Image: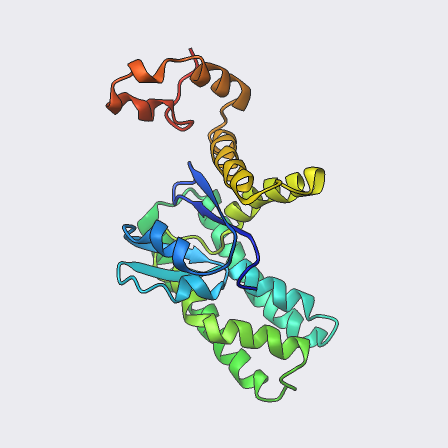
Length: 245
């Protein structure tokens, strides 16, 4: 898999900007270069490269939706165990939805999660460890539980805060643009072309995230003489800062 082309997708915590970084391989060198000056939390899908980043300033945590999907797919193997786990995970999502509907602030969300989410997470994690001991290791349900058990601490990390998300579904939705494009045009033609496509994805999807019409943005930005703009004004042309004239 080391020579498999991949887009590393990075979405900012405020959801205003996304960066599609194309690489011809799946090694960890490129994410390391991009994140070396980053300080904060990084939510990932379980891709081992991110967990192995030798950076003390980054705290990696995982996406509950990915763990849920593996359990969901194991229902045909053991419906009873999978259904119970999905039921408990649904409670976690119900808490998140309630926080959103009640428009709670960061401190209130943290308090709600501490009181309601953390006990569910602890009980579910302990339960999976016990049940796993009774399962055939190669069964679908055992593999699904093993995935979560190995990552449970980092799957639960969000609940210790009031600002982190339970999953990274927001960036998963952004990745659909690449999937749709790949289905339509099949190939970029070269690694260089794929990198250019990544830059275009980054700009145009960032427009979408900020409710900016991509055509109007491109028409305006490309018609300007950027060489005549003060360097400190260039950032005003980014989609999340841009104002339609």
